[in-house]
Amino acid sequence: MARNGVPAQAGIGVAKKINMLAHCIVRGMSQGVLPLIGYTYAAGMRKRMRSAVRLSAGGSIVLALLCTAASFTFAMPLVRLFNQNGGESIVYGAEFLRILCLGGPFSAWAYACISIFQGVGRSRASLALALMRKGALDIPMMFLLRLVWPVYGIVAATPLTDMIVCLAAVLLYARFVKRHGEDKVKREVDEEEDPVPLDKSPAPAYHR
Image (cartoon, rainbow, N blue to C red):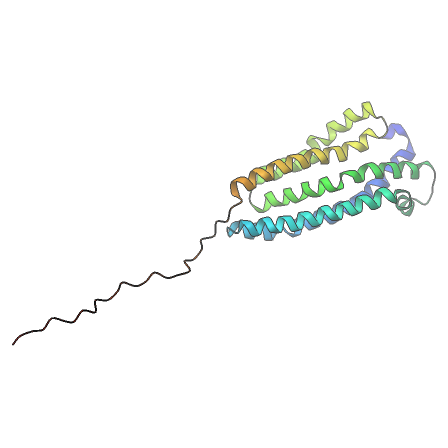
């Protein structure tokens, strides 16, 4: 990004800060439900666990969609809040923000699945998704997309990586639910077994 000049560097800095606000909120929602997921999974209440996942992940995705719409629609005014100097850096920042915000809904599901796998003790799946999102995919994508799209390719690598990680998270979660989605709670017997009937036949008579 340094090759593109100071305005591009200032623009990407402001765009990332604005985009990070939505990411922090979504990440907090996914981590906040982690104890509930861990408790319901350990207790064998898998249906309740899936209900908690749907509620938290659904809320995170809806919030991310709202933030994406706001960032895409009001990109220029939002960048001006953090950059009062004006000029070319605001234009760069608005364009970068419109690109970055596209990955919001996808990263929301990725964050949710990372917390889900942490809560149920699937550390390998959680670590794999986290490494894919930061390091394993985004850095190579930056180098590749920079060759195709010199100024904006580095920025586009982030939402594209979120989309790929989201797809991997969907597949891993579907596989997990297929194997461990049924309740394991031992249901108590509603009706007690009848006691052994007593012998009510009359006692034999004794002759003196």
